[in-house]
Amino acid sequence: MEPKRLISTLLLLLLITMGSSSLPTNPTQRVHVPCKRLVFYFHDIIYNGHNFKNATSTIVGAPSWANKTILANQNHFGDLVIFDDPITLDNNLHSPPVGRAQGFYFYDKKEIFTSWLSFSFVFNSTHHKGTLNFAGADPLMNKTRDISVIGGTGEFFMTRGVATLSTDAFEGEVYFRLRVDINLFECW
Ligand SMILES: *[C@@H]1O[C@H](CO)[C@@H](O)[C@H](O)[C@H]1NC(C)=O
Ligand SMILES: *[C@@H]1O[C@H](CO)[C@@H](O)[C@H](O)[C@H]1NC(C)=O
Ligand SMILES: *[C@@H]1O[C@H](CO)[C@@H](O)[C@H](O)[C@H]1NC(C)=O
Ligand SMILES: *[C@@H]1O[C@H](CO)[C@@H](O)[C@H](O)[C@H]1NC(C)=O
Image (cartoon, rainbow, N blue to C red; front, side, top):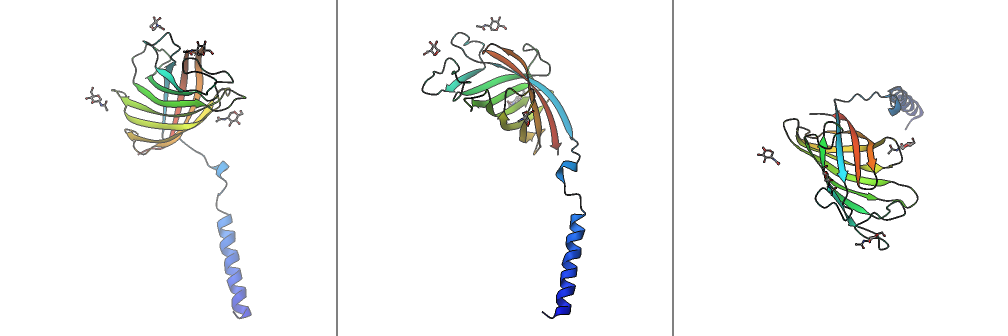
């Protein structure tokens, strides 16, 4: 390439680079506004050997030093729990359910109390029809924990967002209630 040509090519490249760096590329400066906000509660009654009638969840896998009736010591590390929990609009277990939270969680750290969640909200009521699918780490000692809303069907077709979980009640190791603040950022 002759020198004059080379210089003009370099100048052109420089201009292109300068142009693109003036675009707002810093993601922390972006303002995220949800297209939909929803709040639900769900209630988990774990089977403990005495509550078969009321239990909504059960240990299905346990480490070899534990059993499937009682949550393992060492922060329940290695326990895998399947659940089919009622979802309510307020924090009362006996309110009419608007759907079911169905999925599993497992405890995945010996040193601290933490779990990993994968579940769906399955709605079939006058309030909502469709599903929302969730996944993510749930560090239980955090007052609030963010997990991903990875998709949806029906009323929630192709949605995505973030759900903020907080433990609204915790009674022994038999009952807990989670408050779920859902912010959807993609709505169709
Ligand atoms: C089941 O739930 C009912 C209603 O909340 C309660 O009265 C009863 O004590 C519970 N039974 C067991 C075995 O937990
Ligand atoms: C399970 O483990 C607990 C605590 O270690 C013990 O009290 C209980 O008897 C065990 N249950 C069964 C069915 O082995
Ligand atoms: C939802 O409820 C309606 C009315 O009760 C019923 O006909 C339908 O089969 C239900 N759908 C699912 C997926 O459970
Ligand atoms: C848990 O809390 C810590 C410290 O407040 C925070 O940095 C972290 O993002 C939280 N984790 C989740 C999954 O919300």
